[in-house]
Length: 301
Image (cartoon, rainbow, N blue to C red; front, side):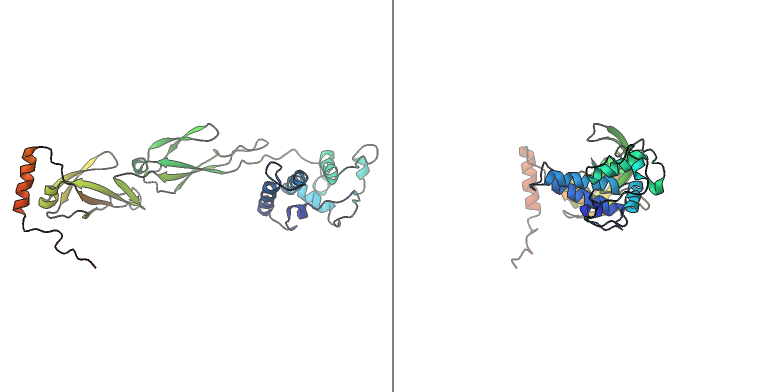
């Protein structure tokens, strides 16, 4: 019976770590999958790769394989260990491939150092990651939101107040299903902030685009500003403020230790003329400010 070198099948060394073996298997499984591969022997190679990974991913099977195959070389006939004929009943019934032989090793009870093979060990499920898009207000307040998963599950997720864009939230035991009674893996929820027309988040700071009337910018005085917690605060605009003026409110940004700041950027909005009286008032303003020219310093470079 010809020996099959599972390490050579996966293209890894005999000292390869479990992670290296897993990566090699995934790469080759994609390459030789019968549904996508154009290789003429894709199906056979796919089965061979799967068989190699099934053995090498399991510590006990790998140890037994290494023990039995320590002195084998590629192409040599397999010489079973002493007493092997007792495993199969009446004589040695194995005349097929090496996979038949190795499968029989573990069905018959030959394990690490000849010990009795135990039941399959519970395996923890894989960790998974999903994205969750929330509003700036939900992130600021730390709301509870519903997360719908591809497997038709819905989970309630409590956002940490002030959660940042790109931050991950770990949900223990909500990931992939375990095997042989093992626990689920963990689920990592990557938070993404939805764009908002008025509030923009930059790290821990928030910028609010605040529309103001021309007379509010010109004369100054207090205006009411909405906040992400649903409240309102009074902001004093300095007289003569220009369009784009940026005012800072310390500690009013995203919650944290320390909290961020809130920057209010003024957007001067010219009201539309809707009545004859309003048009007359605009005409008077033009006459009153006839000496003002906002384009006086505009020069072509």
